[in-house]
Amino acid sequence: MPKSMTINTRVIQLFGLFLLATLIYVGSDIIIPLGFAFLLSILLLPVYRFFLRLKFPNFLAIILSVILALALFLGLLVLLFSQLNNLMSDLPKIQENVQKHISALSQWIEAQAGFSTQRQGQVLNEQVKKLGDSAMGVAGGTAASVSHILIWLGLLPLYIFLILYYKNLLLRFLFLCSSRDYHTEMQSVIYDTEKTLKSYLTGLLIEMLLVALMNGIILSIIGIKYSILIAVIFAIMNLLPYIGAIIANILAALITLATSDQLWHVVAVLGVLGVVQFIDNNIIMPYVVGSKVRLNALVTIVGLLIGQALAGVGGMFLAIPSLAVLKVVFDRIDGMKHWGVLLGDETPKLNPLNSPVMRLRNRLRRKVLADDPAYNPPGAPSAVRPPADPSASPDPKV
Image: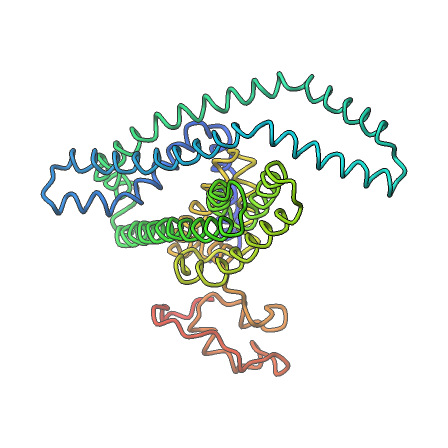
């Protein structure tokens, strides 16, 4: 391939990614609900196909699948609101505990820094006043966010129904977008995308249930108030890799501080959450979720931040599945496999600067040239070779 053609291809690819990011940023209010509806539709496919095997009409099978999803979602909402209602009923006790912790902290600051409690009170009152002055603006933004959430909740069932109902039309559109020479690759991408997302989402649901049960049971045994609320919050925030666990720990610590006058309760909650997180990362995640989404940690964190910048909290939750779909597509297109390598977690054991064999694209070609001094100098650990890929093309392309 001529060098100028390669450069032009790279420029087009980068421009395409930039255009996609711009489209998400501008149309996030439309794209994010559609993204959630697409993921939920993939998750409901086994249920939908189960009803079809029972000889239900297509329309009725879709309706029953959507109703089942709504019932589960409403059950989760009822659980959360019941816990929040109990939390609000304890508001006087919470205010008393908060005041006690503030007084203890104020005395500690005065003892350590000589900053009098009176002066601390003045500074605190000034900050509270500033916070109150900006509360109206925040309230307006919050009202807008709540209205968006309510609109989403109303549109999601409709979107899910329409995606399942018109799935054959959408699939036909995808095949018509490509020439007949690429229909086999298109079919493979569609099957791999469905399999990857379905396995990943199912695994996430099982992981959420196990994490919530472990946290809820252990926290209830040691006597932590609102253990169910903390467990549910942690399970939901755990959907965001790395970042979600940090946010969940902060929220759990604040809830425990507000509902208990014992500091050891906070330490116990953070300790339990840390142990459960360790078990989740090393046992539950590998065996339940598995290696369905092979994304490296750097790309995952950057993807979450980009998703938040482009589309808010909804973008963060959709970032990982979106990257997983992109990786499936990139791995199937010869001209974009380098992007799949960038997203993946297969770290080369050899340094491409010292071992030119690692600069080659074809795995079979790398294996053949692993002992060639021109590609793998004697100083490099040539004994470490990439495994042979049976599906690799015999054509040794570089």
